[in-house]
Length: 213
Image (cartoon, rainbow, N blue to C red):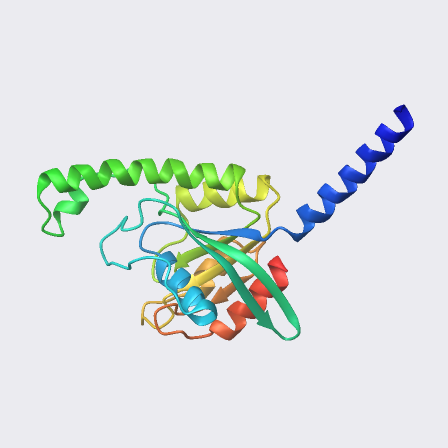
């Protein structure tokens, strides 16, 4: 009986590993607020599934809960990968309700949104530590990338030994500086793009298939 049980357990472990290898990879889209994460998530989802992930807005912290689009199959240059996209709330050290007042919100709505955004940051960090298999890190190439949040998040990603692809978004804007982002994180490859206009998405898809396939 002991031999049979041991054989059964061995078969079970092998089967579990095989199924684990077939599981789709969850790729988290991370970055600071208003970097264009949801715009990118929607661009990828529409290109490969025809559906959007969530609403886009110029108001910061529009995404206040992680949103997931499953079964996104990306193919480029003979490589293919099927992933679940996780669009996460923008991570910041502090969410102040007063920043919402600048967009003509009532104070009660601003306070509610700031509370939801704070909870969303905690959720994003939980996903990063527990539930993603790789990271697409989106930065606004018109902004200074040398911030506490970016340094902290990239450090956490590296400590988790997760594959990470850094994207320098908004290259359609005149103030864009991709080199500034490359200088900030020289240990990682940086790909320029405009998620809004769709510029350089072919290379983005090539790199997604390469990094996460």
